[in-house]
Image 1 (tube, rainbow, N blue to C red):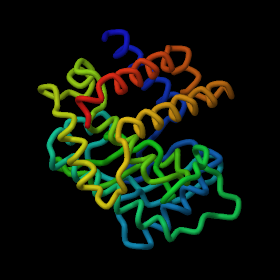
Image 2 (cartoon, rainbow, N blue to C red):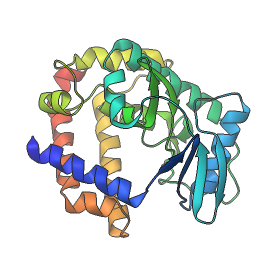
Image 3 (spheres, rainbow, N blue to C red):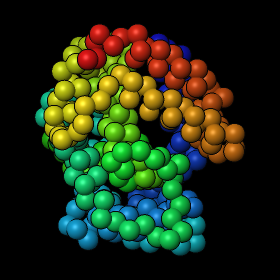
Image 4 (tube, rainbow, N blue to C red):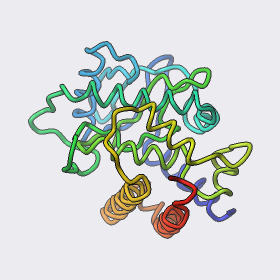
Length: 260
């Protein structure tokens, strides 16, 4: 347990060092990536439809992107806001709203994706990292989804499966208590159903197999980025992230009876 939590702390430090963020009043600034232009086009499309649940892009020049700050609790504070059914359901509804609104977006001709595009059924534009830390919360309600660095086309179940892993969470009792800060071990089967019912109108699918496949895809992407020398993935891999991920995949497979 201690090793896992220490690895998480090191990973978070590497992430901050690789992509430092500064906030000046209501403007967020951070280094651009090759995908920033595509992300800003996407965010403008959603904002033009009246969605204020994503950041307003302000600029992307001289290696720095700027976005409008959205007030609320984020990052590590997000764990506490989604303990209730209310918080859990609000995040699922918000993710569904964004997925549906994004379908009318026409990407730039030379779009750069933050993660590899994935073919399949019911492809939408996925966030790629919709964990509680990337939602903005007010009074146990998810009000925005930020940090679209991994924007890419993929089946909507890709984002749903990723979210289930972290929101339910589909993790050990120890991690649920020590990292996710639940006061007691959550009823995973109940929380899976609350999220899926709140997202709504999904085809029948095997939750365990779909989450495991998404976890493996995340691990594969982390390895690929680390091999390219990118941070924070290189630090994550050197700190044993892939071995930890493999162990968590085994946990999900072995505890199907707690999930469905």
